[in-house]
Image 1 (tube, rainbow, N blue to C red):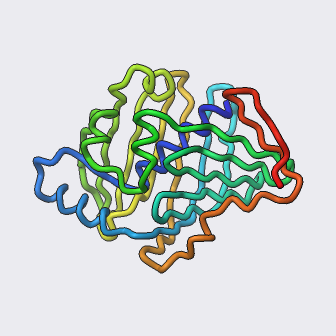
Image 2: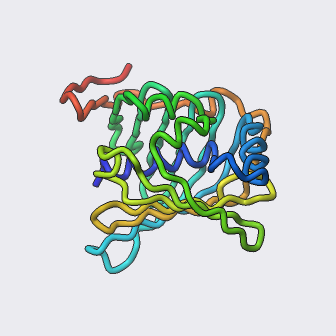
Length: 221
Protein backbone atom coordinates (compact mmCIF):
# COMPACT_ATOMS: atom_id res chain seq x y z
CA UNK A 1 0.00 0.00 0.00
CA UNK A 2 2.76 2.46 0.96
CA UNK A 3 4.68 1.73 -2.24
CA UNK A 4 1.61 2.33 -4.41
CA UNK A 5 0.87 5.53 -2.46
CA UNK A 6 4.38 6.86 -3.06
CA UNK A 7 4.37 5.91 -6.75
CA UNK A 8 0.96 7.51 -7.21
CA UNK A 9 2.03 10.81 -5.66
CA UNK A 10 5.28 10.77 -7.65
CA UNK A 11 3.36 10.37 -10.90
CA UNK A 12 0.99 13.09 -9.81
CA UNK A 13 3.99 15.32 -9.10
CA UNK A 14 5.24 14.74 -12.63
CA UNK A 15 1.81 15.45 -14.10
CA UNK A 16 1.29 18.51 -11.89
CA UNK A 17 4.58 19.99 -12.98
CA UNK A 18 4.13 19.65 -16.72
CA UNK A 19 0.99 18.79 -18.66
CA UNK A 20 2.31 17.74 -22.07
CA UNK A 21 0.57 15.95 -24.92
CA UNK A 22 1.10 15.11 -28.57
CA UNK A 23 2.90 17.97 -30.37
CA UNK A 24 0.70 17.97 -33.48
CA UNK A 25 -2.06 20.21 -32.08
CA UNK A 26 -1.10 23.93 -31.97
CA UNK A 27 -3.54 24.60 -29.11
CA UNK A 28 -1.94 21.89 -26.99
CA UNK A 29 1.52 23.11 -27.89
CA UNK A 30 0.53 26.50 -26.54
CA UNK A 31 -0.79 24.93 -23.33
CA UNK A 32 2.50 23.07 -22.95
CA UNK A 33 4.46 26.29 -23.52
CA UNK A 34 2.50 28.14 -20.85
CA UNK A 35 2.97 25.31 -18.36
CA UNK A 36 6.70 25.54 -19.02
CA UNK A 37 6.64 29.16 -17.82
CA UNK A 38 5.54 28.13 -14.32
CA UNK A 39 8.58 28.79 -12.14
CA UNK A 40 6.92 27.94 -8.83
CA UNK A 41 3.49 26.70 -7.85
CA UNK A 42 1.51 26.25 -4.64
CA UNK A 43 -1.94 24.67 -4.44
CA UNK A 44 -4.33 23.17 -1.89
CA UNK A 45 -5.17 19.52 -2.52
CA UNK A 46 -7.74 16.95 -1.42
CA UNK A 47 -6.96 13.30 -2.04
CA UNK A 48 -9.43 10.41 -2.15
CA UNK A 49 -8.13 6.85 -1.95
CA UNK A 50 -10.70 4.36 -3.27
CA UNK A 51 -10.23 0.63 -2.73
CA UNK A 52 -12.47 -2.42 -3.33
CA UNK A 53 -11.64 -3.37 0.27
CA UNK A 54 -13.02 -0.14 1.73
CA UNK A 55 -16.66 0.95 2.02
CA UNK A 56 -15.69 4.64 2.08
CA UNK A 57 -12.70 6.39 0.49
CA UNK A 58 -9.80 7.55 2.63
CA UNK A 59 -9.63 11.35 2.39
CA UNK A 60 -6.58 13.51 3.10
CA UNK A 61 -5.91 17.23 2.66
CA UNK A 62 -2.93 19.53 2.51
CA UNK A 63 -0.75 21.80 0.39
CA UNK A 64 1.64 20.99 -2.46
CA UNK A 65 4.54 23.26 -3.43
CA UNK A 66 6.86 23.08 -6.46
CA UNK A 67 9.96 25.01 -7.43
CA UNK A 68 13.21 24.28 -9.24
CA UNK A 69 14.06 20.58 -8.98
CA UNK A 70 11.81 19.78 -6.00
CA UNK A 71 8.20 19.28 -4.95
CA UNK A 72 6.84 19.01 -1.41
CA UNK A 73 3.49 17.44 -0.51
CA UNK A 74 2.53 18.65 3.00
CA UNK A 75 -0.46 16.64 4.25
CA UNK A 76 -2.24 18.06 7.31
CA UNK A 77 -5.02 15.51 7.86
CA UNK A 78 -5.90 12.88 8.82
CA UNK A 79 -2.19 12.06 9.35
CA UNK A 80 0.62 14.59 9.16
CA UNK A 81 3.09 13.62 6.45
CA UNK A 82 5.53 15.43 4.16
CA UNK A 83 6.74 14.00 0.87
CA UNK A 84 9.58 15.59 -1.09
CA UNK A 85 10.36 14.52 -4.67
CA UNK A 86 13.46 15.63 -6.56
CA UNK A 87 15.86 14.18 -9.12
CA UNK A 88 17.60 11.91 -6.60
CA UNK A 89 14.99 10.51 -4.23
CA UNK A 90 11.48 10.37 -2.89
CA UNK A 91 11.40 11.14 0.85
CA UNK A 92 8.28 10.46 2.92
CA UNK A 93 8.16 11.78 6.51
CA UNK A 94 5.60 10.56 9.04
CA UNK A 95 5.69 13.62 11.30
CA UNK A 96 4.16 12.29 14.53
CA UNK A 97 5.96 8.93 14.33
CA UNK A 98 9.29 10.65 13.51
CA UNK A 99 10.02 8.20 10.69
CA UNK A 100 11.47 9.26 7.34
CA UNK A 101 11.35 6.76 4.45
CA UNK A 102 13.79 7.35 1.59
CA UNK A 103 13.36 5.79 -1.86
CA UNK A 104 16.14 6.43 -4.41
CA UNK A 105 14.98 7.34 -7.92
CA UNK A 106 16.76 5.75 -10.86
CA UNK A 107 16.45 5.47 -14.63
CA UNK A 108 13.52 7.13 -16.38
CA UNK A 109 11.73 8.19 -13.19
CA UNK A 110 14.87 9.98 -12.03
CA UNK A 111 15.08 11.80 -15.37
CA UNK A 112 11.45 12.87 -15.10
CA UNK A 113 11.78 13.98 -11.48
CA UNK A 114 15.02 15.86 -12.07
CA UNK A 115 12.92 18.91 -12.91
CA UNK A 116 9.30 19.87 -12.25
CA UNK A 117 9.18 20.62 -15.98
CA UNK A 118 9.94 17.28 -17.68
CA UNK A 119 9.98 17.61 -21.43
CA UNK A 120 7.50 15.99 -23.79
CA UNK A 121 10.02 13.47 -25.13
CA UNK A 122 10.58 11.93 -21.69
CA UNK A 123 6.86 11.71 -20.93
CA UNK A 124 6.18 10.03 -24.26
CA UNK A 125 8.84 7.42 -23.50
CA UNK A 126 6.80 6.39 -20.45
CA UNK A 127 3.19 7.00 -21.51
CA UNK A 128 0.84 6.91 -24.45
CA UNK A 129 -1.01 10.24 -24.18
CA UNK A 130 -4.53 10.56 -25.57
CA UNK A 131 -7.54 12.84 -25.23
CA UNK A 132 -7.60 16.60 -24.99
CA UNK A 133 -11.39 16.89 -24.68
CA UNK A 134 -12.28 20.32 -23.30
CA UNK A 135 -15.33 21.20 -21.19
CA UNK A 136 -15.97 24.28 -19.05
CA UNK A 137 -12.38 25.44 -19.23
CA UNK A 138 -10.84 22.06 -18.41
CA UNK A 139 -8.90 19.81 -20.82
CA UNK A 140 -8.70 16.09 -19.99
CA UNK A 141 -5.96 13.65 -21.01
CA UNK A 142 -5.44 9.91 -20.46
CA UNK A 143 -1.90 8.58 -19.90
CA UNK A 144 -1.31 4.85 -20.31
CA UNK A 145 2.07 3.33 -19.34
CA UNK A 146 4.26 2.01 -22.12
CA UNK A 147 7.00 0.64 -19.88
CA UNK A 148 6.00 -2.87 -18.62
CA UNK A 149 7.63 -2.23 -15.23
CA UNK A 150 5.60 0.93 -14.70
CA UNK A 151 2.48 -0.90 -15.88
CA UNK A 152 2.91 -3.29 -12.94
CA UNK A 153 1.88 -0.41 -10.65
CA UNK A 154 -0.17 1.87 -12.90
CA UNK A 155 -3.09 0.97 -15.16
CA UNK A 156 -3.83 4.51 -16.33
CA UNK A 157 -3.66 8.15 -15.28
CA UNK A 158 -6.34 10.75 -16.07
CA UNK A 159 -5.25 14.39 -15.83
CA UNK A 160 -7.58 17.40 -16.06
CA UNK A 161 -5.95 20.78 -16.76
CA UNK A 162 -7.34 24.22 -16.06
CA UNK A 163 -6.82 25.94 -19.41
CA UNK A 164 -6.96 29.39 -17.79
CA UNK A 165 -3.68 28.91 -15.92
CA UNK A 166 -2.25 25.72 -17.51
CA UNK A 167 -2.17 24.04 -14.07
CA UNK A 168 -3.61 20.72 -12.99
CA UNK A 169 -7.17 20.70 -11.62
CA UNK A 170 -7.71 16.97 -11.07
CA UNK A 171 -5.58 13.83 -11.15
CA UNK A 172 -6.78 10.23 -11.09
CA UNK A 173 -4.55 7.15 -10.98
CA UNK A 174 -5.89 3.60 -11.29
CA UNK A 175 -3.64 0.65 -10.44
CA UNK A 176 -3.94 -2.91 -11.80
CA UNK A 177 -5.77 -4.00 -8.61
CA UNK A 178 -8.57 -1.51 -9.23
CA UNK A 179 -7.57 0.95 -6.51
CA UNK A 180 -8.01 4.61 -7.47
CA UNK A 181 -6.28 7.71 -6.16
CA UNK A 182 -8.09 10.96 -7.01
CA UNK A 183 -6.58 14.35 -6.17
CA UNK A 184 -8.33 17.71 -6.62
CA UNK A 185 -6.27 20.93 -6.70
CA UNK A 186 -7.63 24.34 -5.77
CA UNK A 187 -6.41 27.89 -5.06
CA UNK A 188 -3.39 27.78 -7.37
CA UNK A 189 -0.66 30.30 -6.55
CA UNK A 190 1.66 30.56 -9.55
CA UNK A 191 5.03 32.36 -9.80
CA UNK A 192 4.64 33.84 -6.32
CA UNK A 193 8.40 33.85 -5.53
CA UNK A 194 8.18 30.73 -3.37
CA UNK A 195 11.14 30.54 -0.96
CA UNK A 196 13.59 27.65 -1.46
CA UNK A 197 13.31 26.55 2.18
CA UNK A 198 9.57 26.01 1.70
CA UNK A 199 10.49 22.82 -0.15
CA UNK A 200 12.48 21.26 2.73
CA UNK A 201 11.31 18.23 4.71
CA UNK A 202 12.47 19.72 8.06
CA UNK A 203 12.42 16.42 9.95
CA UNK A 204 12.21 16.86 13.74
CA UNK A 205 15.17 15.97 15.92
CA UNK A 206 15.47 12.24 16.58
CA UNK A 207 13.73 11.19 13.36
CA UNK A 208 14.58 7.64 12.26
CA UNK A 209 15.63 7.40 8.61
CA UNK A 210 14.55 4.17 6.91
CA UNK A 211 15.53 2.98 3.43
CA UNK A 212 12.99 0.20 2.68
CA UNK A 213 14.68 -0.87 -0.56
CA UNK A 214 17.98 -1.71 1.15
CA UNK A 215 16.87 -2.25 4.75
CA UNK A 216 19.19 0.47 6.12
CA UNK A 217 18.13 2.87 8.83
CA UNK A 218 19.64 5.52 11.09
CA UNK A 219 18.68 8.48 13.25
CA UNK A 220 18.69 11.91 11.59
CA UNK A 221 20.79 14.60 13.30
